[in-house]
Length: 271
Ligand SMILES: Cc1cc2nc3c(=O)[nH]c(=O)nc-3n(C[C@H](O)[C@H](O)[C@H](O)COP(=O)(O)OP(=O)(O)OC[C@H]3O[C@@H](n4cnc5c(N)ncnc54)[C@H](O)[C@@H]3O)c2cc1C
Image (cartoon, rainbow, N blue to C red; front, side, top):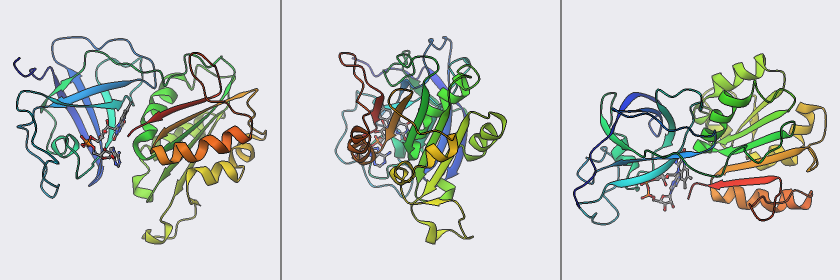
């Protein structure tokens, strides 16, 4: 079977650091499907696409007739249909991301015609408070949720807990800080794990996202304790963070959500 042709184009690329980028990908000659905030698209490049300098060689030989495809949470609002925005981190030993790092505005790329996934607010009743916990690029689905739903779910409280190593890895910080100032129902709580490496003294939170939760900072920001009766918790990104948070939440009565057994904790592991 011939390799699929690129059906989309990189509209815009914004590097936040050498290993973090925001890509906007627009379809060429077709329309983006409807999707829900929190869902993911798939992007792909051929194995002949070059790897960025400084990255490791391919972990193994790649079949020449197959696109390299990976899933990425959509960060753009589901009401904006011109492009899909993705927040991507470089895995220097990975297969696709070193190739994504050579793309520029105008570069052809393959984009899945479907945006899918169950990590959404669909099964969260209106009025429920939302705690959105992420490491790294695991923030992406929450950016889409907030861009789409913050001014719709006016009766709900939101908290975004975002963990990264350095302050310059806290993508979307200025947008979230502005949203927090404009929307009285949003608490934005960024945290970094390597404050000693900051060029200027860091006055924000240090440690990991789970520490913010354990220190009761959501309750402090909201003025009320988040409880399973009124709050859903979303966990996204590094599987280690998710595995650490699940027992902490279970001990407080939060149950993992599944179609068969509804609960208040929703998870999306990136690897
Ligand atoms: C539903 C879903 C949504 C996703 N959304 C995003 C997103 O919004 N942004 C994003 O950057 N990634 C996202 N990912 C991860 C993404 O699909 C790729 O796995 C990642 O970009 C690495 O691809 P690669 O081909 O370069 O490396 P691969 O060759 O696929 O991976 C090599 C190994 O690197 C490790 N790895 C994978 N991702 C990371 C990471 N981010 N940091 C450190 N180690 C990693 C894993 O151990 C993996 O086995 C998502 C994954 C899933 C399943």
